Image 1 (cartoon, rainbow, N blue to C red):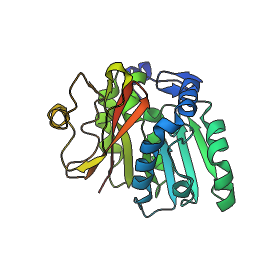
Image 2 (image 1 turned 90 degrees about the horizontal axis):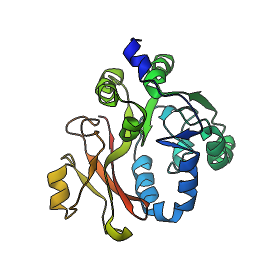
Image 3 (image 1 turned 180 degrees about the vertical axis):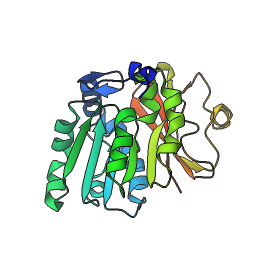
Length: 238
């Protein structure tokens, strides 16, 4: 690994810019506000059939938006996360269901940029699910764009899916926008936001090239807190 790569490495911890204890508190506090997004994402995941019994879950945190019924379809889970509190909260949320069906979990605590290639070499047939982590990479690493550009090389021949931040914005006066989920073969960009009537200043999370060209893209509105809306892009690699 090059020195520049080492320089940008994110280290595990309880408090993170992209998650950690503050995220668990937010997820609990706003769980009702998150219900529409949770339902939309649950339907997307239930429809994904990667055709393998093993799953690598990248950035699951506590699995706040992952349905038990989806996780329990797999005979083994390998989970990669920087948040050192994630295993505890994940076990509290999903442990009973996974124990009931006999699905073991193995945690890798670290930056997925460093860990994922090693895990992939050890888990030959496993599918990969990126859990709202790719759009947060800029909060953890200055070299995030270069690392995102490397993903296609890592994932050649792999079955994988991702849901990730595409755009986010503050909501004036904290009044929720009446946004509706939709699917498109086009990438969500500034022009499409305007056509949808979503004016204002939007933060681009740099994930426009995560999904391969031609993939059906699912867009879910997520009111993460009352005064902030995220557009989540989800898709499955062909």
